[in-house]
Image (cartoon, rainbow, N blue to C red; front, top):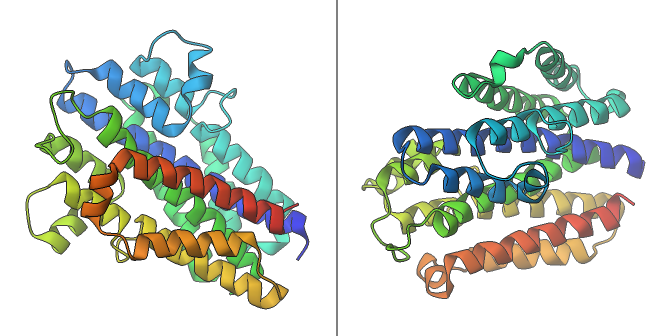
Length: 312
């Protein structure tokens, strides 16, 4: 496969996943702001910018984190390449570049999303109604993901697409956990303390894992158990260990057909092993924030190594 084709498939998947991740991040913040409208709302909106990696660009345009400006910047600001509308545009551009490598269902999912998004008016992005837009974005992303899983041939085109999805998904899960535990943690709370139930429930809902949590633990929501579910439980679709398991599988398949293994394979295996043999109490003893920050850096490095090896 041409590296240009592989690159377009990889980034098509990453930007589709990123649009969903941005939507999920905003859904968490809207839910928290709705539950506690007078309690540190500016800090919550600021933390959302930090978690999404949008803080630097945002504060070059705005002086404070207000709901309306944060929503605008993260959903439709054309100067923000990670805004939801920008992600949809970039994903569609990449899909057009590799139209013949996509199945009909994949193309209809991407192109249909782009066409519908272009027809949205200002009301769709208003603070009081944006939740409907965010739900639509997550639904469209899941439609694309289902088209990939259900219709693509299991060849290198599929594996590059899945790589992009899971690299991006691992990054998002890490940032969601980090922003809640480190940035939003009240000053009087200690790590593992009685952090507000509703905020942790919002985190679980944002990754569609609230029911899964109760199924696995059959207990009230506890911060360390939420962290374990989203970091170390391989049966959780958006957990870090599940993302790494999938990444290792896709890289192994690529190594088989291209006949060589490189630094990206070593790094992915190292990250997978670290998670596989880790315990949640060890993570907390060393600091959850420090662990998550280290994972974000390693995941970025892994993405860079994949690009060096396959997407020059």
